[in-house]
Image 1 (cartoon, rainbow, N blue to C red):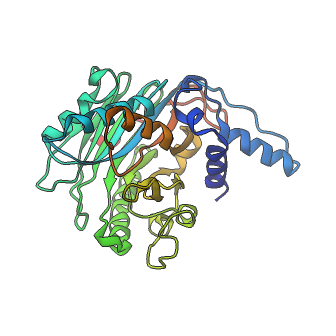
Image 2 (tube, rainbow, N blue to C red):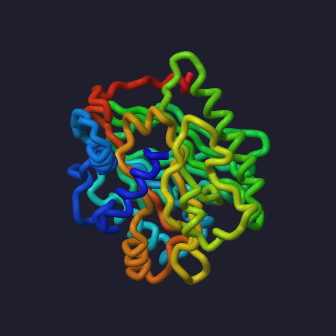
Length: 335
C-alpha cells in the first residue's frame, strides 16, 4: 500500500507537463518515488538507504485508441500522431501497448503515427475475428524476443503478449482490454482473474523472468481511483485490487476514460506491475497530461480517442532501488 501511495503522491505533486512531456527530458528525470520513500524513512527516524545509480531509462505508453481501423479519418490519425509525439517526448527506448485496434489495416495505420513515422519500430499484432484487438509496438533500442496473442478461455478481447529487452532490462508486457459489459464489472473482474492465473503460471516456471507489466483498459478502477471517478457510488463496480491478487501493484489512479464531450471521468487505464518490476525497473507512472493530449487534438481538429493515454518510465541500465546492478533475466517465457 505504501508503494502505491508513494507513486500516487509523487505523480500528483508534479506539474502535468513536467511529468512526461516537454519541460524536463525523461533521461534526466529523478526517481521521485525513491525521493518520497527517503523522506518517509527520515520522518520515521530511519537512516536513508544508499541512493541507487540513476542509469538510463525508457518509457512505456498504453492507450486505448478507440476502434482504429482501415477507414480512420485523416484528422483522427493526426490527433493520434500528435498525441503520441507528446506522450513520448524526450523518451529513450519506447514501447506502446495499444487497445481497440480493429484489424491489420488499423495496426498498420497506428504504426505510421508513432514517432518518426514508425521508422525503426517493430509492430507485434495478430488480427482476430473481433474488432477490439490489442497490439504492442517496440521502438528503436527495444527488442521483441517473442510475442503473440493469448487465447484464454473466458477472455473476450484476446490479450497480446511480448517479452521485450531494452539494455539491461527485460520484462513481459501484456496489452489487455477487459470487457465493459454495460458497466457490469463482474465480467471484467473474472477476465482479470483468468489473465492473472496465466501470468502466475508463467512466472512459476523454472528460469522464468519475474518482471511483468499488464497494461491497458481494465474498465475497473484502483481503490484510490474509484474515489475520484464519476462511478464512485456504484457498489457493484469492483476494483482492480479485488481480482488482481498478491504479488502485483496496480498503478495509475487518475481518471482516464472520457465521458461524452467532458474531460476524464473514470479511472479505467492501468499498469499492473509485479513486485520484482516494481523494485528493479519502475521509476514512476501516471496519466499523460490531459492538457497535452487536448492540445494535440485541437491541432488535429478532432478527438484522438475516448481515453487519455497513460505512461511509465523504467530503468534500462544502472541499478535497482537496493543499489544492485540491473541484469537480464532471460526470455524463458519464449521457449
